[in-house]
Length: 517
Image 1 (cartoon, one colour):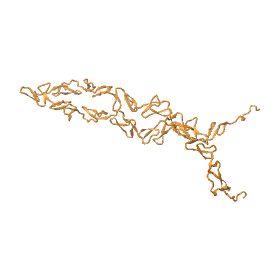
Image 2 (cartoon, one colour):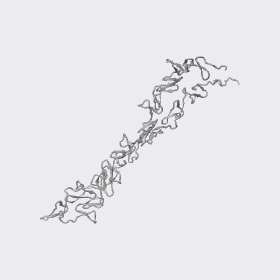
Image 3 (cartoon, rainbow, N blue to C red):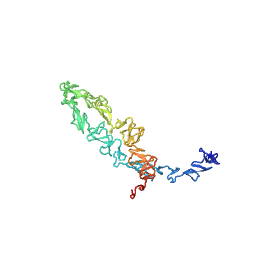
Image 4 (cartoon, rainbow, N blue to C red):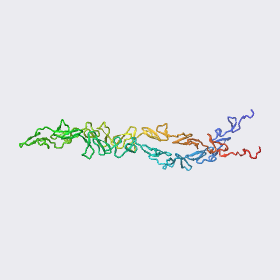
């Protein structure tokens, strides 16, 4: 057949297209980036040239400052540099900003350089954030335990769940009572009586109102309330409301209980007459001061809260009982044991220091008192708070227990055991303890790196009209046109060139003023 090659010349071979091509290196071929241009003659491919080691390396006509030529006309940047168009520029870390050629950080709008970190831009709030942190441009976020002031957006004030009636909230969860008020066991500000109010109730600043059946003790400077007997006790004393206790040698008049009448004792009772006819008291008895012909029991030690009813024998008043170690001293009796307290009056428990009565239904039970409220905990001992399950002691406040989260809360606060609550401007991610920035209007062709802040993907720039949208960037720019997906410019009418910067000459297309129609 005419034109068909029957056999290639020496040093050549047929390829798949039946064309004779040169053979190099015994058919092994040429090294990388080379081609067999003649028998046993390898030359560089297009875009490559020989270096000093006789190797074919790629050529980049403009050079590759801060990079290396990895393929013809393609530069790969060195470590620490990134690609910007055809150039390699410094890739410094610049949070909330962008890096300049001199490796310095220029902050985005609403951010300023961190005084302690030159490569970090932090949010800027023109007004000082009080009890809060500047977490986004012109946005203060209240610290834990504080709430935003109703009229001052930059100021956060302490928060007290109880509202601090009769006082003011001076720090988180802590009320300071107004003058004349004091904290009770529930940390409520209630009227206070500094000197106490025994047998009464404190109704105001040092205003003691006696319980029913009691009146103010006018014989004492202490505002105690003492029992009141409507009728004066005759030959006795008022020991309980409308209850008279008779002196020894007297007994209650059956018709008038407030009167005590002498016992009908025979003359020289508890004694005998002497030869002179005088009444001589038996051992352990003494003459009655009111009636010398009557001998009454003598107690060497005075009977306290009782009457001497036999020699050296005291009989206690109602509501009192004998003291084992001091028989002549009758002590108050309480039918129920005083827990964390002492019975100092009949059926009245007085709490030990650091304890207070917490329940009117249990008047004998004194509970521990903590000066500051136990937050997320219980008062287990005076000024000792025991945390609830899932909480741990705060490092700054012994009375406050903070929720514990086994995983660190990212961009969020641990607000309950193993519950993370996102900061303002953040939302939950697939991981329950990690919150990610939230951009209200989305982030097209970019990534939301901070609340309502988009960072464009490589090769994209911010749209001049929509801050949440990133558009394709053409390396040489595209001033008078649109940058297409292939990163080439589609020029507007009357413009041309790769970057649409050349204006078309349209003068010759217009009709001349001298043309005759």
